[in-house]
Image 1 (cartoon, rainbow, N blue to C red):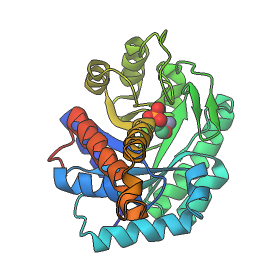
Image 2: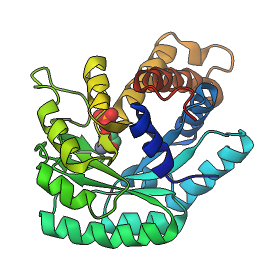
Image 3: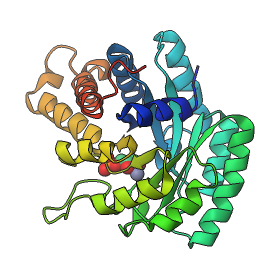
Length: 287
Ligand code: G3H
Ligand code: ZN
């Protein structure tokens, strides 16, 4: 069964590693991520953006698909199903639908409104035994229509939100969704360190995990990051493998046009990407 993300993140923070959140878009994505987690004996968080939720025919469909796979694939590692960058309404809908974890992204509100809305959702999640992620400062770039200015978080504001009893906190530290531009300045470890000092044991979340140099990711983990979100890298890997299959004309040979064959290289590419990230984050054999 699904679990909330609290225990896996508490363990990650104490053990100085991070759990990967990998966003899902469809059956292939979900199966690839779950099988890789099981093979590597790693905890995992499946992220669902509001856009991906709509694409997959709604949150109830997602919950049904994920629960079905946990059972039919005999998945034994801890798996959390988490709303990614949720609105207040989206978070409530996921709680109703059977998600085990939600992110409320109130970073575009002023801090008082962010605190008020986060407080309400923390209360609901506590009552139902779900984990909740909040955000302070903003992640740059765009993901599924969620656009961020990329401001570094104010550590005092982070403390205010952490003190509400959230399970994990996403703080903007110069990270960006999607591909990083050539002139990117890198992560602000100064901000991360200041946020960690103010928030103590709070597991911190690094969004925009695609394309950050490995050494920076490792350093962020030593400074209190316990969850790293990856989306774009799986998409690029899937697209690249699928393009190669088609360019090689394999869809034209035999039954190569059968979707179960056509989507197989992309599926394997997602598995390889997830494996690489779990090794980098240090979550292998931590289930
Ligand atoms: O919320 C999801 C992540 O922050 C994904 O970011 O697409 O840059 O890997 P990414
Ligand atoms: Zn994000």
